[in-house]
Amino acid sequence: MKASPTRPTKAIIDLEAIAANVDQLAAHLPENTQKFAVVKANAYGHGAVPVAKKLAPIVDAFCVSNMDEALELREAGLDLPILILGVVPKEVLPLAIEYQITLTVASLAWLEQVLVSFSDLTGLKIHLKIDSGMGRIGFRESQEVQQAVSLLSQAGAEVEGIFTHFATADEADDSKYQSQLARFEAVLADLETVPSLVHISNSAASLWHSDSVQKAVRLGDIIYGLNPSGRDLELPYPVQSALSLVTEIVHIKILTAGQTVGYGATYAASQEEIIATLPVGYADGWTRDMQGFEVLVDGQHCPIVGRVSMDQTTIRLPKIYPLGTLVTLIGRNGTEEISATDVAIYRGTINYEVVCLLSDRVARFYKGAD
Ligand SMILES: *Cc1c(COP(=O)(O)O)cnc(C)c1O
Image (cartoon, rainbow, N blue to C red; front, side):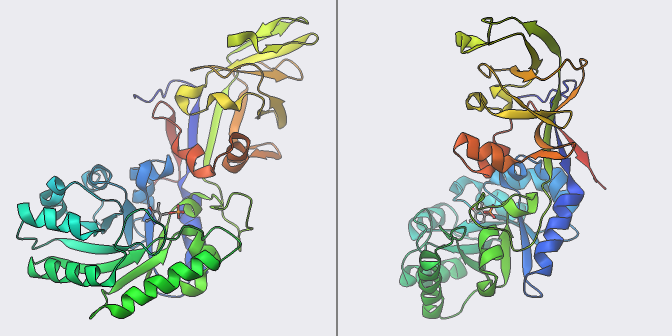
């Protein structure tokens, strides 16, 4: 989908805030902890290339989810290490070697298939993924990890790292976290040699389990200023949210009692009401279930009335405002703020999904690009 930069609906991304958040994390982690900035999914909707360019001087590597995301960074001239966290199709192996993209090896079955097609892996860097209890991808048995190390080394690949991922690092109860940590440490203890780059911590583990951080951390949600637990756990130190979503009033009218708004006529004015229309809808990632939520106009909370449609949303105003008046869907307006977490909780989801779902149609504008 093409971005629509002529429309007043836009995401404003504060790159200085993202850099400050990385610095804030670094200040609270053991010295010399390597920082991997997770910029998968277009940097959680914030824009992978601008975010990566801003962070390149202050992080050690980037993490993405697939080869195309990795190549986007390389094509933009970024030359830091890039780790692909997911399983890639074996056909992309030559690209990984050519563009120096580090791959995750998560199973023997995958590796054996790769070796059928590519016997020489010289120049390839690998991190091994251990499934310590997340239950998605990764080795579960030490012997298989050891076997993978042997096969990779014989084929000329460099096994640089080993990592795992936690299912519940954002929860108050740490029993599952501790059992995963123990399982991972047991695998490491079984290996003849442990790869040099051991990393286990996502944002939540870096925040609330900073005592068990290893050589590197993989920081996603938190660098965008979002609390990975939503409102469940308090952040141990403050961060700044980086993304605002704004638009403008493009149409205004006065309805009399009984007149309805939007598809399905789900809302009827109960008296004379001022209804404004905003050029934003579910095609922007402002989903249909936002009916009944609110936006900010002139520092006041105004309800979303009627169905959110593909390209338009309707709100009720306390008084008439001029066309072109700023409306904040996510972010600060006057003394009030609506956060991505507020939106997420209303929608019954997590802030990650709210920012990732902002579609390409929403033009991104950057503050603090170098
Ligand atoms: C996405 C991802 C991360 C980052 O998670 P956050 O909660 O956003 O910090 C870290 N590690 C892996 C394996 C991931 O897939």
